[in-house]
Image (tube, rainbow, N blue to C red):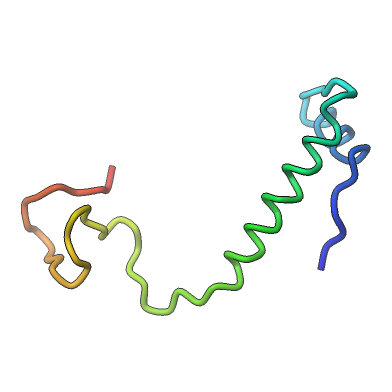
Length: 77
């Protein structure tokens, strides 16, 4: 497990990226980054198995009814 980002580390990272933060924002940015990291860590643990890629998703239709080449509302961009 990775240790949490401190407010000082968040400020240094933002500065290196060219985004200097005001002193009052260091803690909030560190908390937000730590939350995002925890969500991503949880997602990485999921087993998607045979889940089809998002490009094959059709809004409003059950996944089993999708057939290549059909006309309809497509969520792919």
